[in-house]
Length: 184
Ligand code: SF4
Image (cartoon, rainbow, N blue to C red; front, top):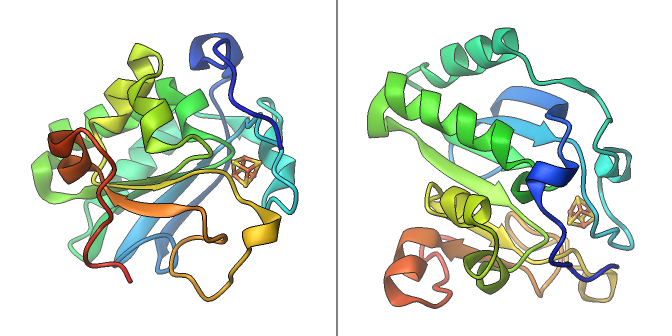
C-alpha cells in the first residue's frame, strides 16, 4: 500500500473517467442507492476489490448524458441517496462535486451522500480545498485504506477493521472523527 502524498490532487490526476455506474443497489450504504465508481486510485492496497479502477483512464468518460441518467434515477422516490466509490472519489473531485451540485439543485436536500476513501477523515480535513469541499457535501464517509491483515468480511459497509463508518456532519462539528451511530 502507498501512503498519500501532497501531490495526490484531483486537478493533476483525474481524467474524469468512471469505471461503472449502478442504479438501485442495496449494498453501498443504507437504503436503495445509486452508485458511481470513479476511475483512478493511487493507494494500491493489497487485496483491493477493484484493482482495474486504479488507472485514471479506466472505463469511460463521465458525460452529461450519464449525469442526466443518474439524476433521473436519483429522483425516484425509493432512492435514499448517492454513493461515491472507486477508484478514489477524492482524486476525482471534479466529477463528484459536479454531480452533487446538480443533485442538490434539482432534487434539493432529499438525498444523502456516502463516499468511500483510502484517505482518513483527518487527512481529508487537512487536504487540498477540493477535498475539503467534497467532505463537506457528505453525510457518511467510510475512511481509510483496505488493509489485508485486518480484513473482516462481517463488517457492514467496509472490508477491514481499520476502516471507519463516520457521520461526517457530526465529525465536522466536533473537529474530530465521529462514528455513525446507526451503523454497527
Ligand atoms: S483505496 Fe480502495 S480503490 Fe484504492 S487501492 Fe485501496 S481498496 Fe482499492
